Length: 231
Image (cartoon, rainbow, N blue to C red; front, side, top):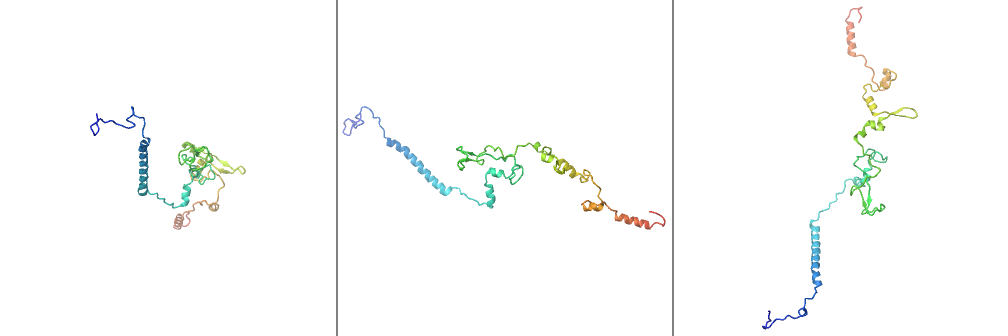
């Protein structure tokens, strides 16, 4: 048994030791001080680290000015507007040619469901994610056989003027036959024979004349024959 400094028995005293049981109490401030100190330490370290890396190790954001501001403005237009510059169905397009099938004009969505809210933070545009294509303004999906000349009405049929009956256009295969005809397609368009002068005036080549060398040889041969002999 423990004794005191004077050799007697040690008897603990105090409010806790005088009780027959341990009191159910704890120091709330002391317990909460530990996580508070940890959180404060983390915040201080984060601020110091951010200041150091932001001042000395941050990457440099270099903005290169465009050489052509007009080109930069055109490239900065919305993607649907840029795609619509090339179209075979839009008469106001800059280039009236078919657009590649993959260049699809797509829809834009609103995060809050209100399409009138055009705020940048509310709009989900095709530049962000792949949205659904629009129902109009996109090129049709074609197979290679769909592009054959005989399946295109504009170049596979013959059209005539409804008033005069004159031929306006002919099928492309017929045009190729006329273009490759060595007679220049004249056999398909019979007409009166043209004289040499009239043909030259209309741009046709005159018929070949006699060879001067051959004519000269015939004249010398006749001079050397006796009188009375014919050619």
